[in-house]
Amino acid sequence: MKKINMEDIDCLPFWINYFGCCYPNAYDAEEEISASDLMMELFTDKVGNWWNAFTGYDDDILDENDGYLEEPATLITTLPQGKTLKIEFHPGDILYFINDEQIGSTGPHWKLQTMPFRDIEQLLSLEKGRQLFLLLLPLAVLDNEKDHESVRKKIAQQMHNYFPEHLCESVSRCIVAGFATPNDHCV
Image (spheres, rainbow, N blue to C red):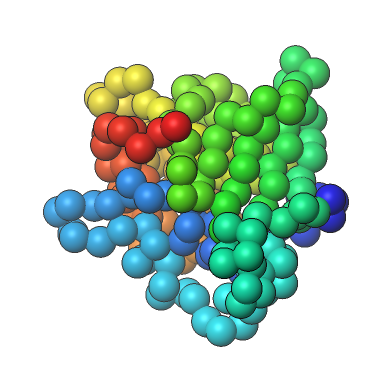
């Protein structure tokens, strides 16, 4: 495992790629645009090359190993109540674990919307809480549709540390719209 820490991901190339690949349901039907499409506004070859180096991507990895590495870039950090969060960044998937139990995946057999938003929101009070919040946001599920606008504002507010305001507003709308999409693809 290639251990990484929060400082390694606290940069724009990481977040551009992360938001670009972690939200398969993040689609704003009114605007007819997805979070991935919106992230393309900031995407460059340099940003893509950074992500490829970070995840260990090469041209053969998807064919030979379905996009998985034996030793992926892995973030391990402590959560409240003595829990351990581990996130593996593979070229073809991002896997999420709490106390070594897989709780999510962004890859071809994605498993998202597995944690209540309110649990993820509570992480904001921690040191590095913004990063933890944004990292676990793809796993969020929202219990109450009437909370969508306040949740959208909360997401946009945390994104402002990395992205221009107009992009935060648009991407957060896509993400919240994805919360309302049934998660039929979970395994």
